[in-house]
Image 1: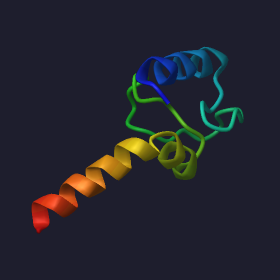
Image 2: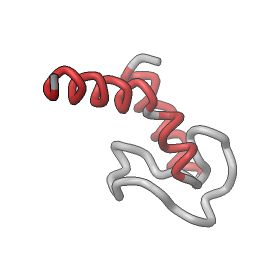
Image 3: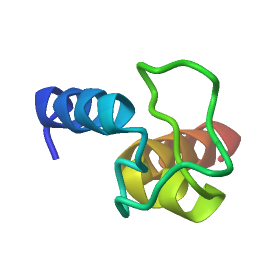
Amino acid sequence: MEEAEKRSRIADAAAKDICPECGKPLTDRVGTGSLVDGVFCSLNCQATFHHEYYLARARASELRDN
């Protein structure tokens, strides 16, 4: 997913007070606290939404450790 599309989904979800990954209402809030990163209903939704970012960080860490 492109960054522009992610930002748009995050902004739309924030306006509707729903999770940008699954669309559930936000009763519990998970995330960095920054609306730019998104606010999610669970850690699973946050990890799924930002999967590419976490995968790149893991690969970079792996390369750095070897």
